[in-house]
Length: 116
Image (cartoon, rainbow, N blue to C red; front, side, top):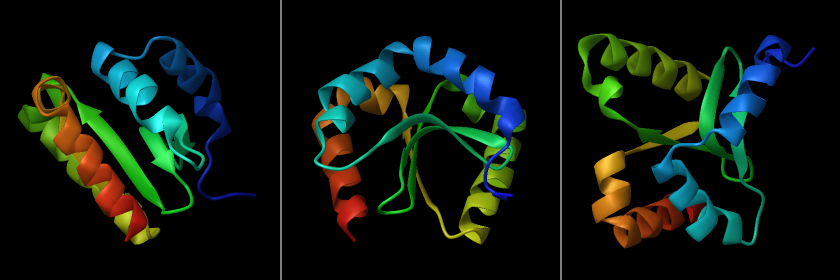
């Protein structure tokens, strides 16, 4: 059994793929989907669903809305990030504001981190 896959989250991850936020759609359609390697959307890893995952580089990309900056959200993200580090996955986090106002810089940062 794959320790990094929770089949119980599959249906929810499929729903999230259909209902991506405006910022997730922008990042997906205007950058990630065009990359010359596979990028997964709303990927189940362990007990979590990540926004985007580049398996080749073991990189998770998260697009964070305002709820991630409240104390409960910060605590959950710290726990998630720790889990991913333990299994050798790097997490890149960007705010909705980053996507909306610094899109080219976000894309360049992802590219720089992906190839390292």
